[in-house]
Image (cartoon, rainbow, N blue to C red):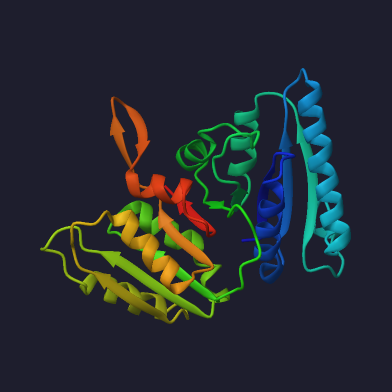
Length: 266
C-alpha cells in the first residue's frame, strides 16, 4: 500500500483527514496524492475553500517534512512524499477516477458543510473497487496499537480483510470479532480465520459474540470502544432495493457515527 489518495475539501474536517493519512503513510513510507475537486465555473466560496485546502497541504508538508514528488524518482530520504492536484469538471467522476488509481482513499465522514457529495462514501465503496478509510472527526486520541476486524462470512468482509493486510502488522494487537446472528452459528469460523492469519505472520485474538436482541452495530461499536481500537476493519455490506445499492444498518452506523478510523471495502 504505497499510493494513498487524500480528498481535500478546504473545510475544518481536512485537519483530521490529513493527519489520519499522514499517520498511516509514515510506517508504510507511502506517497500521498491530495485531491481538491471543484467545478469549471468556480464560485467565490469554492475558490476560497480551494485556497484553504492548498494552504493546509503546504503547511503539512513544511511542518512534517513531507517531500513533494510526482514520481518515485523524485523522492529523496523523506519517509513520506506527497503531490497536490486541483481538478475541475465532474467532481464525483474525478474522485472515482483518482480513487481507482490509488491503493486507498482517505476521506472525511459524511457531514453537512464538508463540501463533498453526501453519498460520496457509498459511491466510492460501490464504484471505485478500492478500500476507503474514514477519518475520525478529530485527532488527538492516544494510540492504543489495537486493530479490530469485524468478520462476517461474506465476500465484503474478505475483501476488507485483504485490503487491510498491509496495515495489520503495524498494530501491536489484532482482534477478530464476529457476532452470531442466529443460534445456529458457531465460533469455529473465526478460530479458523485466526489460524490462517498466523501464516501471514499476524497473531490475532478473537471474540465470538453470541446472538441476543441488541443491534449488531451497537454491539460491535461497544467492542471497539472497550478495546479503544486505533483501526476498525469491516466489509461494506449492502442490499439491493429496486435495483439500487443500499448499505445496511451496520455499515451505515460505522460510516456516520464511529469516531475511529474505519477501513471499508465492498
